[in-house]
Image (cartoon, rainbow, N blue to C red; front, side, top):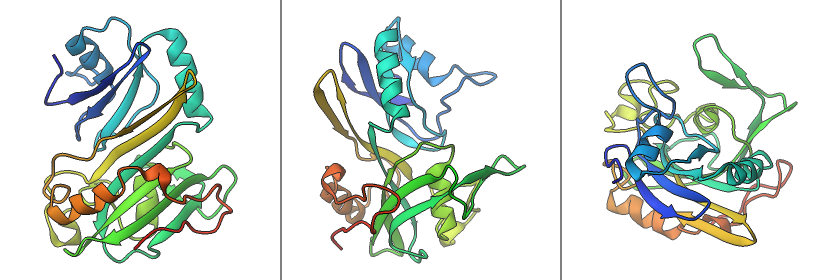
Length: 244
């Protein structure tokens, strides 16, 4: 039985499973709590289970686990080579420095455990996004990451002046004049090829006042196949072209 307050099961294959992680669930084992992988293994009664990527504690959404070492090696390689397409949705303020395009730069750690995006591009974190207004003072951001760095999306949106709603590290209390009921960042879609078969998943956020508003759902449902959008091929491409 799945652990309903931590995750829900999305799909089971012979070599991997896909889950939808709840927000504010730690991936790593804490002092008093089991790690997410152990919880999934216990609840689904799967002896072999291997993590191949991670999500921040505050971030909800799709996570992939391999069911054997051979699959873990292949899937980990796909993540390393950025061959797995990952798409996120976030809600933030409505006055970004730019409304769509690419955010690119090196990320450097700060003493506080936070990260900062710099103007240098020696080994840049690359984030593509577009946004549209929700009609309630907020904007929806649909995001594709080309790299997988710690706090990458959170730092990228902070760099254009719109921290993720509910992000207590890169934002602040009463951000945008409201007290959010959860952090508004969700890994909602994923696509990859494994053993010559294409797997695609879309799992829209199912909790949170702003995520479940009618206007937000209407926007998200338009982009349930984000791989069909005209994303830039690389960091030097022109900004992406999206419908308004």
